[in-house]
Amino acid sequence: MKSGGHVPVTTVFFTACLFLALFATGNLHAANEAVMVGVQKQLFIDDLFLKQPTNVSLQMHSATKTGERTLEPNQPWENASLNWFSVMRHDGKFRMWYECYDVEGWPTTNDTSFCYAESFDGIHWAKPHLGLFSYHGSGNNNILFREIGPTNAYSRVHGAGVFLDPTAPAAARFKCVSQGMFAQSSPPYRVAGMISQDGLRWTRLNNVICDLFADSQYSAFWDADRGAYVLFGRVGGRGRAIGRTLSSDFSHFEPLQLVLENETTRDLYNPAAVKYPGAANAYFMFPSVYDHKTDTLDIHLAVSRDGIHWSYPDRAMPFIALGSAGQFDTGSLYMGQGLIQVRNEVWHYYSGSPLKHEEANIELLTKPANHRIYSRAKIRLDGYVSVQAGDDQGSFVTPPLQFNGDSLTLNVAVRNGGSVRVGLLDEAGNPIPGFTPADCVPITGDHLRHVVAWNTKTNLSSSTGIPIRLNFQMIKANLFAFQFTNSKELK
Image (cartoon, rainbow, N blue to C red):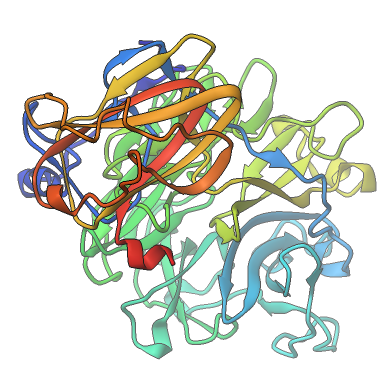
């Protein structure tokens, strides 16, 4: 089987208990053990569901750039550069937290502003006058603060990754991980934590939350499947690499353990790690890959079922590529933290500059033609990786699946002249009468949630709770996801 560049990378086990837990969630299973899929959406991000493949391959899909200039440095406190940022959708608004640098005072901890922007459509953004910080005697700005924290941890924020904590009390529902300077540490820069009730007024935690030298942007989120906060950031490996760690209470993380690294001439910067919403066991990273030979950075995609074991669907292909000559994003790209599902798409925000890695000095940064600009890219819902079949009929079967619900839906795109058919097999691989590929009504066209039918039947309740396999037969098609669900939820 072609793998579309699927390459395993160095991985780390955290504990034997976590390893055993993965069996229970279907991430790791014996050859004949059923994968528990329930009614959760399942993405084809790797070969977990591809058994006995013929004429099919995994294909990664790059995001489509909109070319928009989502946010530009147009305020005095932004006149050196924009930098790391985070986005989310909350309370009916798109919200953004970002860092920027001021030529005045460069380079000191007082040249860095932590700022806020918002939007009602995710395309047109405003920098509201918040009155929270006095800049040259005026509160007419969108600066949240420049330095924050108690005496022993008072410093700027750098590499901030903001997230919403669904388990926290109101006073701490917004959380942030970033670089902080702690007087008792040597060197002093460590991973710091912040909390907020509204995302505007922040409190830095008194103590280091991860005793690790902090640089680039950090990613954190609450992972309900692990019952813990997960932190991703930069560690040493073959050059710059990505590590991961857990915490039960956000106050203390053990040191990061290496989970993703590249070859020696291509380093990894910010992880931009997320757990994909609405699907089971799907973790994504969007690291910037620094190529020493070209001095450029573009954005790539790595995937995981558990957050520990990572692979590249296509190591060579960027998820967001550098722009063409004359565009604003030809030298270095960094993904913003967070992704947002909007109707039938997923929106990503990234920053781009024509400056290469070693060109980011104050003389070049301040030239308008070199400004770092935030922009938006998009991809179809669930559309990061697909099982692809060409002109020749392709097929594959899944491992045994144990599901709930009574219907099977597919996220699938079929090109002209193509089709997809699905059959049901029992656990031993024998066809289930009435539910063979020959009985399946051929699927054509492009669908995010197509209900599979066999002759006039769509109801699968007779197989609920019993291990079955799916047998896919495809021509000229891309299959992104499948989901067993209750038919009443489709109405």
